[in-house]
Image (cartoon, rainbow, N blue to C red):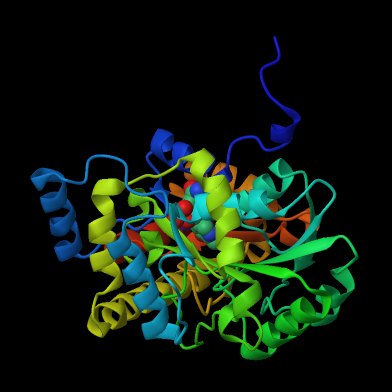
Length: 385
Ligand code: PMP
Ligand code: GLN
């Protein structure tokens, strides 16, 4: 009996599931998978509860998403980035950013097409480029500052390149692409007539460096699919409400695939997701300030243990080099860490084709309560005592 297709070859189980299962099994503190240990804004959760109880949203939502949510997404893009979108043709609601990424790649990439992606890659990019029959072409962001090597990006474009898949703020490095870097990408996309798929799920998690959507650069709105979700911005990762926005022809392709993946999802949560997007500025300011304090707390703690720490400008992940503590291989380090110190982290190595470039690097999530971060750092002292 044939039990799986070649599309799954080499994909295995995601590192996030593996590491969360390890944390559960060992009782270790989970600084691996990126999810907060506090819930999102109370009024948003209350609105969801009311919607569920009062009914009226328990049947299929429209494939594109309910109008109120599409309008809220349009308003969010206008308010933060001055981008105007037509909610009827230029926005599709998806099952988290994950489905938007899948649908964008499946809707665009043919077998033989190349997709340039920033390495280390978020793991679903690898899986979905492969399932689309495309070839991934990495451009590596390297420690210590994980800047975009623009010459390497230019050299990566061939006649088969279809798209550049971006992620800013970037998981797992925490890099936030600067205007000069985005301009170089935009120029390349315009010159070579490429689509840009831009994953911006950490758009509200920047610490000083501004988040600039590439769709706001000249000539880019018409060739960019911008993807985000409420998971990270509102600490509601389990709701899985995301979206893709862009010009009507590209959004139509995303929708063309999405209708056969899930058709629609999360109907009773969509009105509350619309409410989340409209939170006032104080919500975003407080959220960002809290995460910045947690970033500083964890980074200082990791440095005090002896790791080399790369302080991120965005996301809720910090990266360290484990070699100063006498370890060479981050994957091996992460698999042993629960037993050595009662903590779980995620190795960078699994996000690279050039595994050597990521081997000594380990990612730590700081979207956890301060007392949890304190206890994790306290436990990590066991590595040196
Ligand atoms: N892109 C990146 C870079 C991520 O870190 C994540 C993890 N949340 C996703 C996409 C998936 O987002 P969602 O949970 O909304 O599907
Ligand atoms: N985005 C989350 C992370 O990077 C994980 C989401 C998932 O498990 N797919 O940790």
